[in-house]
Image (cartoon, rainbow, N blue to C red; front, side):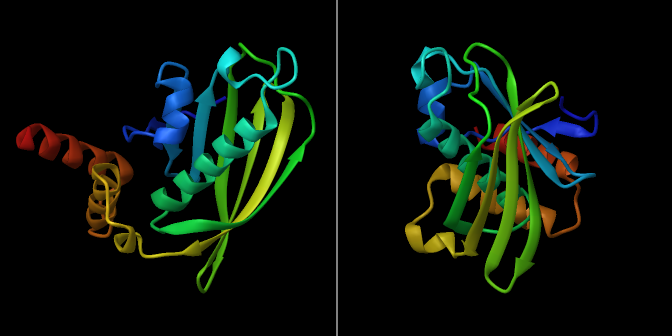
Length: 176
């Protein structure tokens, strides 16, 4: 369900999402060739809404996370302004599912992104969002966001996603 051209993303997830999964049931991938972000997740009882199915609020949160990830990996910084979600089918617990997000277009400060939750041939949820570009330095950056800023600095020098990750790994090892 993840294309062979996608590479695992070594960055941490937001603390909000991390608290549900603690990284054991969550993997992120970036497909630089097709400019898509993938999130593989296996929901458990911690995110149950209807019996044996995922809570809609959790799905909205993880979709927002996936859409934010493709925005960051595409070189933009922004905040969610408008978010639409269509729940087509309940998402079962204890099964591996995927989210694919892709940047659709950028108009001035607006970033349009779409995402869907799926597994096998089933599409469970579809979402669309508009993000407004924003200077994250105004918030005071945490170490995770400082890493993302460094990631963008390296990418602007023309390095691929894979090369950038390797540079950051070496720098991180050197600094620790």
